[in-house]
Length: 443
Length: 114
Image 1 (cartoon, rainbow over the protein chains, first blue to last red):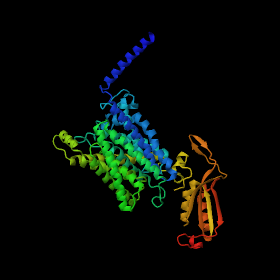
Image 2: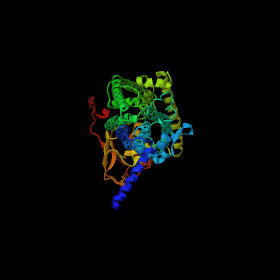
Image 3: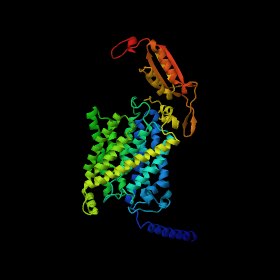
Image 4: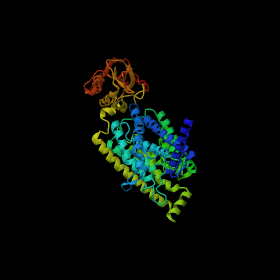
């Protein structure tokens, strides 16, 4: 009798606590369909980071392959910790300091969201982890701009500070319910999955860092060839797959808007990839594998802010425009001679700007009708374009200024650029003491 | 005509390459080789220091006319020494007589084909 009695008391307590927990979180019920998709999306976005590591890793010389892969991997360590500690709070807490960032004591180390369920029917832990993956990949994208020439220690410091001082505030402005860009115009500045927050901010920051750090030794006179385009292609493939979590997951649901975002993503990536190799065929005479991969990325980056509001034809046009302008941007880079090594700005910066601005022309009619209704009668695509311009401009200026400050400060304490001998010996040997390949010939 | 074969450290490759180019020696063949010498090097795997059995090195092969032998050797000596002073493991240079040299494209032979 005794154990049974004990058990029934425990069950009663459990039920009571459980019910109280549900009431405390605003009576939201778990929607298992939405939760399952959001868990999948979270995993898919995490998959993009090894994907990015492979994409970047294949593009550098063989002496830097591990160092470059580590730039992505170490972000999974550093940013995950920061995100749990303060990042989620700074991004999705309530406005403090006049709305510059957010803060919520409950989100500090996620200690107060143990039983929270969002109105979308998803546990807040899932939403927090999903958003955390975006925070990881954004600084890792920047690494492509200054590949093959930065000290590992300084890089670690850089992404930590950048995440705290650039990503979290931007994320708060654009995605938090009380962020000022979220509330610009009748339905906010459109950034469905991170055109401004992720791609423009990373691209611009990369560009600023490149001007601060200077080129790799020997650039552009010495030919610098990719060590392994095969892993680059595999990485691009993983990025495409992961992007379904990135974009379709950003609906924070499992329904119509998820399907719309997913379809737009596929259409834009395909259009971008094909456009790139067609342009290349006319310009250089050959359709390259790296060109196809670059086109995939250009299309995906451009549709990122737009996936929630454009229809498939619009997504395709966005992908095409992005490929054309990214291609031009890389030609211009080659003319100007600055060393954005893996084209973090050329693809993510330019593609993100293209997507965030041009999406205004392809918004689905029902969205515009809602905007007109909530603005009280008049809201045209030109009004929305104005809002988009403002959001993009703010992201550019903020990311550029802050990155310049962060790099300057770090450089006072730890030399950011690798020393000449470290750079010549390669990042793998100088900072990790390992080698990526056995006997692959030097390139 | 001589064939100059230099075995150098991997980390010195860029310096040696640049020094050769500066001395206007531009026709070289580079390959990755491994072998035993007097040197011990350490690598790190999962926090353990390991001394590999065969040490990876770079082999550079350069065919030159006799007048360029000293220029080439000087360029390599200057650039292949660790920190400019030298330490065990900096490598060796071998010079061997070269019987014939033929440019495949034109069929030219001898010194002018180099």
